Length: 224
Image 1 (tube, rainbow, N blue to C red):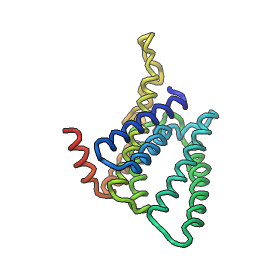
Image 2 (cartoon, rainbow, N blue to C red):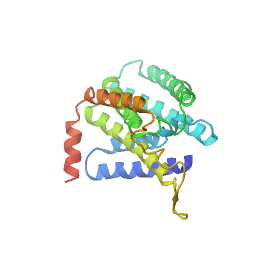
Image 3 (cartoon, rainbow, N blue to C red):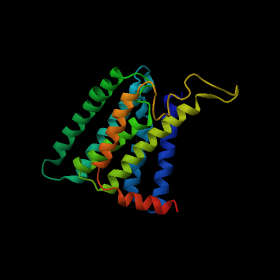
Image 4 (cartoon, helix red, strand yellow):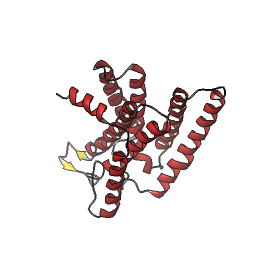
């Protein structure tokens, strides 16, 4: 599998390039592009949420939590205003950081096995859809921006999974390593119930999600 620095560098480069292409194609503005690049980079670390053994991973989780909590505050400040905004924002930042780093990430790393169900495409889709819901219904962002950020999170996580599969191939020996097929996967046939639940969650989140027609229209225009 690829190491932490490879995942971070490739995800950051790919997400930034895609965000820049979005600006060039006038899909979104510079501010949204910056947010998309950051979220895509975080997505590049997301599949390793089930891994907490190495120092680089722990530093990555710390950095990701710091960035995520800061983004939450920025989005909160963009959606709300008032005399208590600064104090509320600081409290939200501190609370978000503690919850993300020391509650959510620690809980996931203890309850999951590396390269298990978490390391799969549908699980990453769940994270992306949860982000879409949180941004639209919680932060009151537009449906378009919420979907864009969700898609970039998914994009970054898929880059991670694909890198792990690439590193599972011994190109010089022309053979596959034992880890091949354990990263970029849609299902594990020995865990049918877990994946059934995952796909049901994906379906429910998708049908309850904000309107996606504008995003679909723009993406369809760009691909034709």
